[in-house]
Length: 153
Image (cartoon, rainbow, N blue to C red; front, side, top):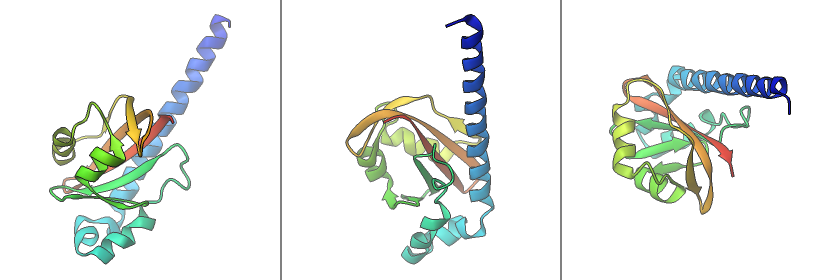
């Protein structure tokens, strides 16, 4: 390949990544602006948790996302369009991040003050290994959104 072709490919890749990061920020903003996804509305009872599922289904229009989760700080549950997970189940059984153990995961969810994009890392998802990048978007003090992007499964 020529040097120009390589530069064009890198430029296209850069634009694609930038577009996806902008879209992830827009999703986090939509989640935080949704009055049905406030910490109180989500965690008041099990029926409320059930009602959050369709509100978090951003994967339909964003095929690059693997999962979108909503977490109310200080609580023990993660809400997604797929299920409601207890933190230990999610981090130890559903998504196993070798470099993100449960205590660090909890600390990050409860303490970050600005969006964080974790570097790509090898993750075991439901028994299948693949490379994943995860973004934690903090749009207001009481809750955060977690978006997982599969890079290779």
